[in-house]
Length: 365
Image (cartoon, rainbow, N blue to C red; front, side, top):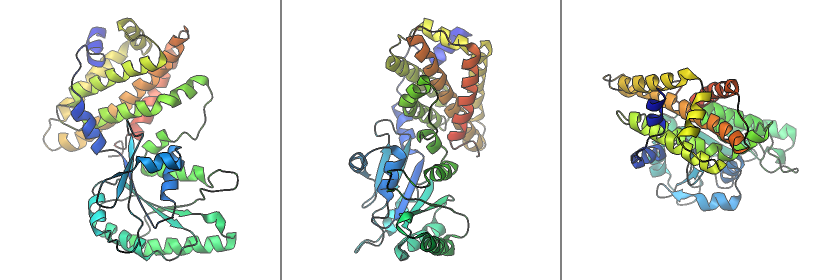
């Protein structure tokens, strides 16, 4: 059984995964941003990614005639921001952009300055999106709220929310924030992240707001986005019939080699055998059976290409993230010449698998 698992997760051949990675890049979890010029859209991206204004500014690439996309991280992206040109600018008709971007966005974020009641261009765009697109998640961000006195702030927020409700209905969330406080923090940052995570689960994995209790956790934080990228690639490739059986184990194998290199540990059959051994004797059996069943289900007419493929994608994301997380834990202690507890490894895998599956965005489907 170990040899079969080794050939699956740690194959000797090097299959071409270009198609899988391209498919994943085209289907990145995406936040579509709307707002007037100066509302705070770019600052919002900086806050979530932890990057500077220069890094964010240099990372945008055109995706339509006047709209831009920002993939994060740039080299191995796990999500995408879509930013429309500032609505309300002279000589700008957003019709074509809204038509094209509406096909790409998974969740919509509207940024309005609290003290700017004139939002006719944004509201017109929202009305059009509501009628023609299938985006169900909307978050309204009231920005720069601390510039107003508290009594005025409440009135401004209520007014803008009523404007949005008039064109969108009541099914949206709203958060009042300020990205430029005196002490450099973000007002209502925790509420903002929690609300975004409910809309796009992977954000909760990307944004590191909970802190770390051990050095090992801090080390993992430096490679977590790479693990998420591999998980996203495996998940996306599993949406394609007959592809996941080869691509998922191959992507996981590349991940293991890459992580070992970053931790300075030689990756060979001995290290692989030791890693799998810590996960318990039943891990290999469960892995092989579940992978095979997922691929067979995808061949069922209609169901396999819809529900079956989505379930497979969620499982592959969870499995890959879980495997990546325990591998980093194992590699950290191996690099220090220390043994790991099998129980700790198994508990960590279960926890990471569950977290990864939820973050895939497919679990509720």
